[in-house]
Each structure stands twice: as structure tokens, then as C-alpha cells.
Length: 266
Length: 281
Image (cartoon, rainbow over all chains, first blue to last red; front, side, top):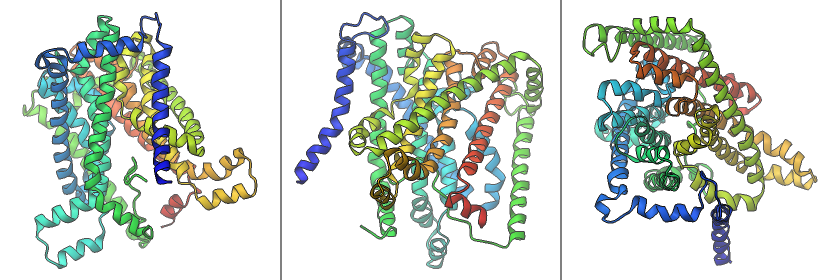
């Protein structure tokens, strides 16, 4: 029964993706449309475009890796700064009221408009792109951390104080832990912003990177190559969200148990 | 159930305090908030003036505002604003209708839900900006190319929230409706929809913000007419004051969209226990 059930789940999960890819494959099989080349052709161009020999000089190393590096550095900087500032602001009601309108404004500014501004300060190099990614990612993380710290259980806080927990262990074991569901929510929003900013900071002004390469393909009308780049970006987005989920799972394990217990545990 | 849905976690209801104290605290907060804005504005004026930051890169607030005052008098500015709002509104509208309809249909039919779950999880993280080259090829710099990005990005926000909502329907209510032989349509209208509406409103709020981001992005990168395009033009022509002024406008637009979406949410859901409890306490 359970084997059949598992089998059914797998079949159901795989049917639609297979159908969609097959539909794409056959619908474009003898396509003469310039913009929609046959999927077979796109798949054929994928390997020579991104993974030619030797690997060290292939585009995946020269273009995709720098992009990913900037994404990682910018995102992690935003995560650290966002959580640190968020804990500081969230712990004081006065500070929170003081900063809230300004922070809400910063969050509401669409992050891509910062590219022209930060270009003034940092040119069009790697530094500018990392700054753009960091600046765009920090607001959802910061504001969610503030909410999380604010929503901490008062009793928990008092208990920790009564037991004379040290400040550092209070910070890591109670405040950041307790706010982690909200921090994770903010971090997830920030991740999709980070990918957007990585791509468009390279489309706007750059001389390498994934976004730059794909736009070059489009401008030179190398259409199958462009499609292969779009597919690569899609795969990248999916891979990053899977990594995120793998990190989130152990981080929030306590929270899942807590919620289940609250609901009458089953 | 995922542990943390894509919403700001609902706040615990505030403990009922004596009214005057509450009012005093909220007016205190207002004063503090205004103080924060004033401090920020003062910093923005003083830092470039003292030469801490080169004023070619960061002009003082007063020059930004005077550039804004100049801009506001040109018909070009209002035309761009209108175009931005049009793209945003159309994109959000299409995404909302398609997202809600598909979400309710997929969510109500067990086999559809199981069959689409992985596909949705797979398609959702594909970054919308990957479609920029395709949009440019298909539609050039016309409004449609930005619209494509906006619809794609905001559609997922709505769809996923509506799916959460349909899954949250009380099984007893659903079984009851079935026992009384409600038709499919009236089941959706009387049982599914009231449960889904709060989720759909959350989806709308998130989608409204995402749609604005993508509208401005499309205008900035692709060059479709609108505020984002004005920023790009100001940047290439070295009109730094004007560029900052336009960025301030987009920020104000973002704040406005957030406030309106929250207002709308409260108004549409005023019958809902979560909103009623909040306003009662």
C-alpha cells in the first residue's frame, strides 16, 4: 500500500514536467521561427556554449562563477549586517519607532534604481555589483529580524534574565534563535532579490557575468545560445532555492516541533 | 505545511491596554518616527555640504528637491508616471486574475494539486529577469516587454498564496457542504473563497510590491517608457540631482503602494476575525 502510494506520488510529480518538456520539444521540433528554435537545437548548443573543453576556459567558469561569487558575497554580507542591525533595532522600542519610517522607505525603493546611483560611487566593477546586491538584500532581512525580535516571548526573556544567562549566550540562544523563523522568511525574500540584482547589474553595465553574456547573445542574435543562457539561469534559480531549503530545514527543526506541539501534537 | 510561509508572521494580538496610554504611546511613536525622518533628511543635506562625500556623487537634499520641483513642472514627468502606473496596474491585474482562477481550480482538485506541485516549485524560483532578452526580441522596447516580466513575477506570488489558502479550508465545512449537495460552484463561493480570501489578499500585497520593482526594472534595463527610463536617461546625461530626485519618487511610489495594499487588505477583510480582533483590542 505504502509502496503504491509512494509510486503514485512520484508518477504524479513527474508527469506534468515531462509533458511540458515534451510539448515544448515537439511543438518546436520543426520550428522555422527565428525566435523559437527547436528545443533539440537549444540542448545541443548548451554544452558547447557553456561547457566547452577545457573546462577552465569555458563560459561556466569565466562568466557564471564570477556572478555566483558576487551573489554569495553580497548576500552573506547583507545577512550578517541585516541580522546584527535588526537585533539592535528590535531590542529597543524607542530606536524602532525612530528608524521605522526611514527603513520602510528604503525597503520600498525598487532595488534596481540603485545601480545607477552606486555606479557613481564604485564604477562598474565587482565592488559596485556586490554593493547593489547587498543593499537590495538587507532590507527584507533587517525588517523581518526587527519583527522577529519584537515578537519574542516576554516570559522567555524574563526567564533567561532570572537564570542570569550571559549576554552572548542570550543573544545566540534566545534572541537570534527565537527570531529565526522571521529571519528565514526575510532571507528567502532576499535570495530572490539577490538573483534579480545579480543578473540586471550585469545587464546594465559589465564586461563579464551571466547577465552580460546572455544580453550579448541576444544583441548578436545568437538565439539558441540565448535560450541556453535563459535555461541556465533558471537552473541556477532552482539550485539556489534547493540549497536554501537544505539550510532552512535543520535551522528551523525546533520551530516545526514547537508548532506541532502547539497544535495538539500529531 | 511549510513552516514559514512567505508572509510576515502575524503579530500576536496586542494586550488590551487602557486607551489613553495606548494613544499616548502611538503619538510618541509618531513623534519619534518624524524625528527619524528629519534626522535622515538633515544628514542627507549636511554630509555632502561638509564634503564628507563628494557632492558630485551625492548632492545635498535641497538640490535633489529643487531638481524634483523642476521635473514636476514638465509634462514629460507626468507622462512617465502615468506609463509606469499603467504597466504596473495592467501587469498586477492580469497576474491577479490568472493567479486566483488557476489557484482555486488547481487547489480544489486533488489530482491537479498533486500533479502540479513539483512543477510549481520548480518554475517559481526561475528569475523573472532571465526573460528580459526574450522580451526584448519579441516586443522591442514597447510596454509589452515590461508587462511580460511584471505578469510572470507577480503571478507566482498570487498563485502560491491562493494554493495555501485553498489547502487551509476546514475539512468539516467542506464535508458539510458536500453532504448538503452544494454544487461545485457554490462550494467554491461559500466555503473555499472565504477561507482563501485572506491568503489572496496577502498574495496581492506581495505581488503589488514585486510588480512595481519589475516595472521599474524593465523600464531601466529594457528602456520601455516610464520613470525607470527617465532615471536611465538622467544617468547617461550626468544629471545627478535629477536622478536622485526620480529615485526618491520611485521610493515614495513604493511606500504608497504598500500603504494602499494594507488599507485594501483591512477593508476587504474587515469581517475576518484577525482584523476584527486587532481593531477591538
